[in-house]
Amino acid sequence: SFKQGKVDDHNLHLPAFEMEVGQDENAPQNKKIGSIQLAVIIFFAVSGAACSYAFSGGPFGIEEAVLSGGVFAALLAFALFPFVWSLPESLVTAELGSAYPEASGTVAWVEEAFPNKPYLAWLQGCLTWTSGATDNAIYPVLFWEYMRQLFLETEDQENSDLHPTWWRFLFLSGTSCALAYINYRGLDVVGDMSITICVLSMIPFIVFIAIGFFQIQPSRWLPSGSSSSLKSIKWAPFLNNLFWNLNSFDSASCFAAEVQNPGRSFPRAMFISVILVSFAYELPLLVATGCTNANREDWVDGYLTTIVMEVAGRWCGAWVVFAAGLSNLAMFQSEMSSDAYQLMGMAERGFLPKILAQKSKYGTPLYAILLGLFVIVVLNLSQNLMQLIEMLNFNYALSLLLEYSAFLRLRWSKPDLERPYRIPFSNW
Image (cartoon, rainbow, N blue to C red; front, top):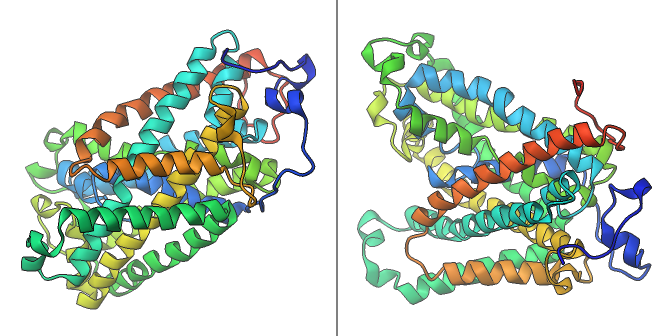
């Protein structure tokens, strides 16, 4: 069966496994994380969603939006889209994450919303985990590419004798294992590491913004010529870039049980992450487009780094490349944590073997982490993951549809469900 055990009418919002086996006083306990740690983990989860369009998180990945939509359209979209698209997604996550503070995350929402259709919850789990696990395999690859770009000359990068396949595989697998060990040590360790990387990756852009601010000419932001008309916008790549740069706030749902005071911390973390993501994209883009005369066609992948070098110097550009590599490590940590806790939650609800629900002495889902690591190491054997990731992005869109359906269904079918945080709108 899909689910083990039942719950009574007064405890429908609690995981069935808790009612069945109770609480084990000797179970390993892990440290809870706070709003700031959760917000930064979400920041890298959202930034990581853009890996199909650029090779890093944070303020990277904006080039395609300018190339396909133009400067004015890109500036306007990155100013509005976080509040039109990202904010509703984060609010839904805050409400249902605090109502169902368990590791299964969105799987719990779908199962509780459609109790007579458990296959929908199973499908939700499969869609989100396969998409996340496959995406996660790309981050060690991108870290490898950035380190080669930083430390090797151009001709050396193209010399395959300097980086044979076996050496590449050992590097990727070793990096993956080291990062998996950090996940094993606890979500609080992942949160602290993410904060450190966030600061290091933002510093070169803060320097760039401070230097470039005095070179801005606002007239460069305004539409001019036929290349800035609505007809010139390539809507498919433009909207896709926005969608994946500003998505994945729902990944925080898997950490609801690991957060101090979810009813208070969850909404705060979601709000902070939306603001952080919005500013991380908008401010560098304002400066980059306002202090250069670059043509729209110049905005290919990596062009932002070129502008940073021109405005702030080569040292700052090199720091950007290094920060991009570090960001991939933080995105790996965020995705692996979310995927592992989701597997643990699904096992606790009876969708997967119980062994995946076992915790380490640090309170982390040991076997769920090892399963994710195994998938990543196997995928590291591939030389081309990008096409597979593009295909799996469709999975995520389907999972979002199930999440919003669950949110609306729970508002109508369980209006009295205890919601520590509730989005302030009526149920009609």
